[in-house]
Length: 120
Image (cartoon, rainbow, N blue to C red; front, side, top):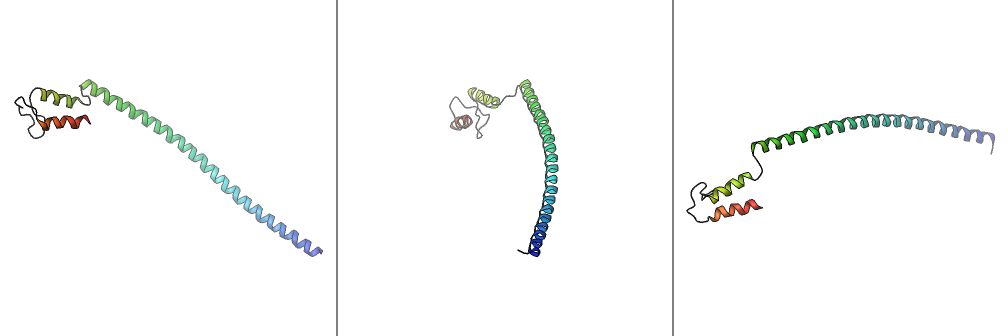
């Protein structure tokens, strides 16, 4: 191998090292941008979690207040059905066909069907 060939190989290697160094610089810049974005997103995520936690606490408190106010007013789930059952036992129709009219001491299949639907 002659001196000229060795010199050419060293020059090629130097050129390749320069290109690799340039690529390394580009990768370092991209990594820096990604680290900054990751830090920003982590900070934003923390802020959003805190906001969500406070929002969840507020909605739980509001729901508790609604439940408390319903209990104070005497409104409970199923209370309407209890009232309809009481009306039926007192001798009135609760079906949509004859609602509120007297039953004349006989069972109504439509009223009884209504009770079957509410049990589901």
